[in-house]
Length: 382
Image (cartoon, rainbow, N blue to C red):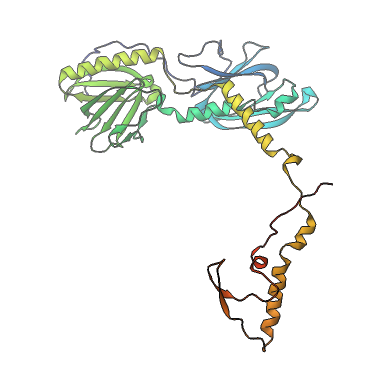
């Protein structure tokens, strides 16, 4: 166990807790103009009404890399912030607007769950544009939410994750490894566990040498403080995680002391840089996504479009001519077999087929029996 006997060896920037993706908030002053550092607006959706909370108010929906924001353009103080981590269910619906003469409009439904409280939101298109009913105007909400779910390692502390394969860290997009340190003791238990550090531009990773599934992935965003303190094992690197990161106190011992101090300075520098400009791992271009959807829809329409010039009509009379000789030959064979006075025909070698076969009855050729379909199907025009 760690003993808090030493003093802080360095100063870290004030940590701004990450709440934007984890909370549901109402009517926050300057919500849509004061985004946190590293948060980016990825799409704007205009002419949107908060039909459940603020009916009659036209507003704008903003999709960021952490949440969905709606704010009224009529009453400036009315707004909503729904973090992606609070999404429970979301889909699109067709609703009928009473204010528009019960005109059908596209709407986005979101069920959010925060602190065991369920919130239901319905954001409706009130533009009155007929073309928007057929367009996926809320597609960016679903696209960015899927990207958010795949990038949790950029934001959240992860214990015992599948992050190491054969002793090598699985690198994230945009991640650069700066150093790897072996011989690092994790002091979370009395006996300690020997492992390795991997230091990157996004996170600090430790994993045990004996069992790589015993690991921790700690983004700099979830580090509240870094210190070198005295413990019963000697000088140790002490990391305090943020409240949103579990509020853990992690201790690591590295020998010799000079090596520990070098690592401490490197982590302090990387932590400072990352806090000033965090990377949440989400890259999305709304214009490019809309163009890809439009191209896919156009391609599908062209594939299903009926073009008469691409088809040829067959003369139905030819159906009765499809190898009638074969049918006649088979019918005659049945009659012959029923006649006990008819002896079996002797086999002969067929050069065309390359094997022995029953001699063909008089009046027929091999080609008559071989061709199931006519050799040429003619078309006709009315």
